[in-house]
Length: 401
Image (cartoon, rainbow, N blue to C red; front, side, top):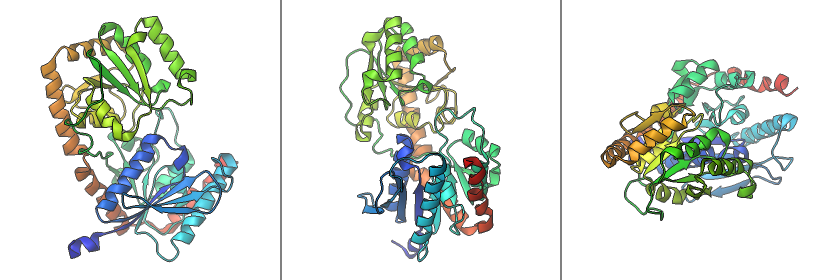
């Protein structure tokens, strides 16, 4: 390592104050970002919420970063006034932790994480992680205060940057840095999961109404030979008792395609590339997608993508080049587009090659990591006064009343 590289190393604190309540996709991304930063030579500590009581636990991960699990005094997920207490306790823990040796920069993930560093003198780079269907949600004064008190704010897409404007975050303060992907793990060549002879369509996402799986099931009317594999988290511990699974199974039976619809539930991340490679087409048609991660993973594996023109998907999928964008909640159009794509091997191959190229060129960690580092360094070079951060913590009081 050169002297320049040594000088460029940073001590980075990842803050995940709602870790056990966060979506799987968000947790996986924070962990992978921490790993990539560590491999690049930076000292990374991930401070994560733990909904059990007891002293904080520390462990060094095999990926080079340290995890500090900060317990909640109540020993369970916090709500209402307990949430305020949890944020305050978490903030006090960080103050004690950093009293002698503060990090160079703190990167809170989510609103509650931003509140824990709202009075910190450490430079702050905020990521909100706007998950689920948040199009209709109105920003709260807490959101605005957290955004205002951060030195820089990272958006994962042009859509999210626009949402940040509604929070009062000015464009010079925000930076679009998409979610990175391991293009070595997600690649076209490699083992594929077993499959039947009929064409396979893979639909990725949590099994919830906003994922749009009902549209995909209805679209099977126009693709009579297709096998549909739905892969994602099922909220109920007993899948067949899950409300959304039952609704989709009833729909599949009504449409007459129940023999062609299969649920895998959540699968291990290590197995996901194999499953993607087993598909002829990956369909990602949610009502909303803030990150586009599933589409990026499919493109990196060289599998064509059909997606709705919403959220980050409009940035990720280049219509007619790496895949096809379709209207929201339009099963007939989806079915016809899918049928035509499955019948055209040449077009699928063109999409596969272009998708892989785009995934590597725009979303690989080789491209994305320097963008993260540039934002961190800018925050360190241009920190705000600590007084600006105090507004965020004060904003909690009227909200919790």
